[in-house]
Length: 200
Image (cartoon, rainbow, N blue to C red; front, side):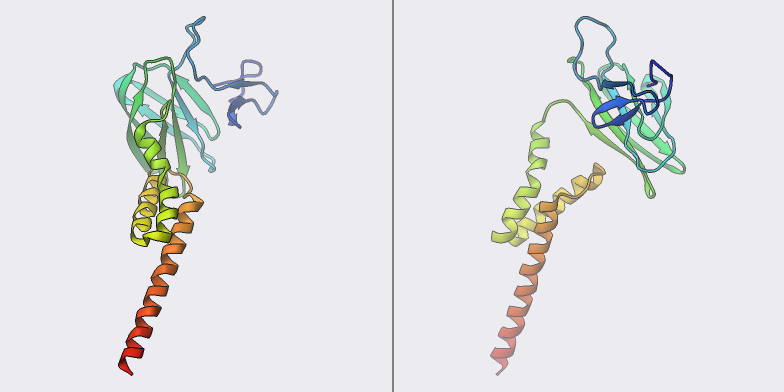
């Protein structure tokens, strides 16, 4: 998206599209405006910290465009499931995305890193599966005190989800790993002492 005032590319800064040159800013589209047809149900945002372009392709919609670092591009695509392919340098990743038809916009975050390109999808509303996944860090921390093995399972699940979504690992999950490690170390020390005392 380009600035309507000066034509420069708009960047996503704190949830808004902003022009770094003239100061123009606008909110990201979320809800369908009933008074206008100017609505886009798919937002693609490049949240890379590395400079460089990312190519985005949606083959079944015959869409192919370039998105720059910090830029957001809005598209109107048919509701339903579509395959999105992103590529940068020598890296490529594809993912199925669900575009709603209820007046809300699906957000897709693309990221370029030193190890590849990644796609993270944010669909409007909280699905039951999303709520369950959000509970993993809390469950990992609680269980690490009471049932360390179960805490370890929840911590691994949350780490796996964070990796797939290219998100930072939750601090509670890191704490759960540490607590499980301490439990394991104490268990090994206790067993070693038991064997030593039993041998005498």
